[in-house]
Amino acid sequence: MLMVGDMPFNVPDMTCSHCVGTVTKAVRSIDGQAVVTVDLPTKIVSIQTGVDAARISHAVEDAGYPNKSA
Image 1 (tube, rainbow, N blue to C red):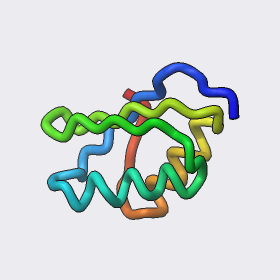
Image 2 (image 1 turned 180 degrees about the vertical axis):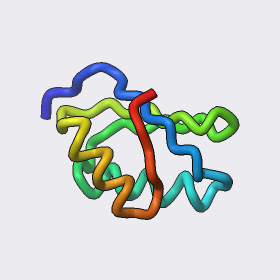
Image 3 (image 1 turned 45 degrees about the horizontal axis):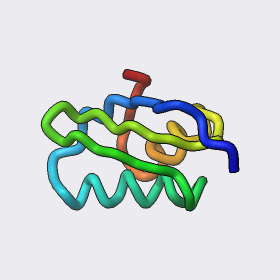
């Protein structure tokens, strides 16, 4: 799959390592090869993937984490 640049998302409800795991799992359910980098203190998730940002955003939201592009 063609990887594109970082797609940063603000995920304000992430508060712990469990949250990070859940968000990462949601992204990888859409693209198993996605590179997911999480900065928990700033609540920013950067994703490198070839999948449309809207699909990624919906997957994270379906996992229980509202988000928006950062």
